[in-house]
Length: 218
Image 1 (cartoon, one colour):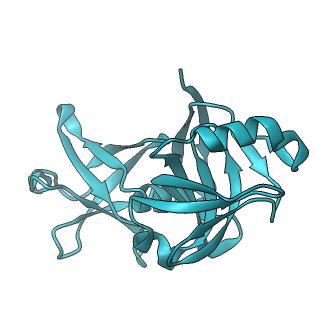
Image 2 (spheres, one colour; image 1 turned 30 degrees about the horizontal axis):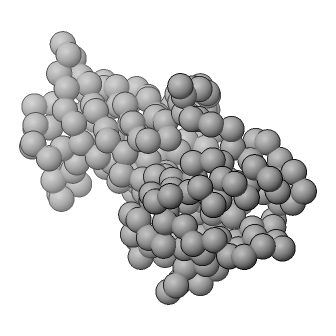
């Protein structure tokens, strides 16, 4: 059973980062308006004017007047984001623009204990794009730091080699589950992944060696 961690964010920087993460991870969005009016869609990162683009694949957004108060719920594999805002017209590309909220509710789902990893302790090697620093891991997946420009090139599922101190490299197949901005590094992202193939070798190593390698409970 997943544990849910709820956080209310008021910081404009934290709100922008959460919305950017939801857009990069392609979280499903639902916009709810007056009298139970609802429309599914996806969001893009906040644009340079400070508005949040929302694309509805069914073209239903024309039913909402500009300035309508709405609630938006974003849902992904790792959690969700909810907030209230207002519609602010369109961008000429079939997307409605929403006012970026000033308060959001963040829900983070954790299926298992995650372990923070000391910098430089573990790394993931990709056959085409080089080596990435592991920032945390669990029995089900790994998070690593990568340049934002490489996120799309990594694909939804791909093979890596996990390099561990004092042991043989471990081939792993990882599926991307979430993407968020790396704290203090605007051009870097933290990529959350889940083992897509058999993770037995990693789980066995992590259970036996984590306490010796500077890996700590998150």
